[in-house]
Length: 213
Image 1 (cartoon, helix red, strand yellow):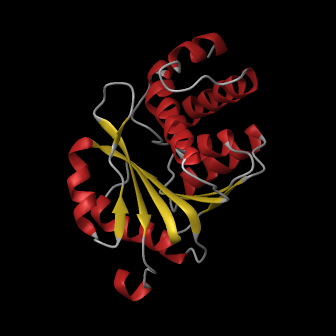
Image 2: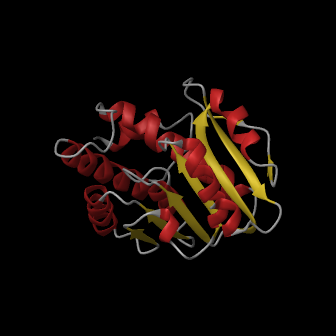
């Protein structure tokens, strides 16, 4: 996809430099190619991919980065790499782990990391429950069984770490009500008019693995 067209589509979200636009173009080409073989995304039109996937992901990354220092990020249920890969693209100094148990999707993510030469991203191709490290920020977007996975996302966050959810506005009440030990910020509307919000919460006390089980 032409980089000038990508830049125009991303205007409501970010203003990426030329090198990042080239990387996004490569990402789209690879995503379209793999999507013909495995179901990575229901969004088929490259123009819609730019806004729904890249725009929203970069918007979330920039917001989280503006709130404080971030060294390690976990993207739980990464799928096609959103928002974890754009986060790694936006912040080369941040180490990003993409957790994806589906082996075909994990293979795509590895190929993507290689093609984009993302030295600050890696793939964990197993269930999130088996991942033993924590992160300053745990991201989650369009994950199935949302209410079941959110406690895991919270457990993977460091004490005083943050959980960043890209969800529909109708899911906010459910997320806020799942656990009182997370202090949630006001949801931030995501540009694009799709009723999506960025909901960020801070893990205020030490989370026990026993609590999750």
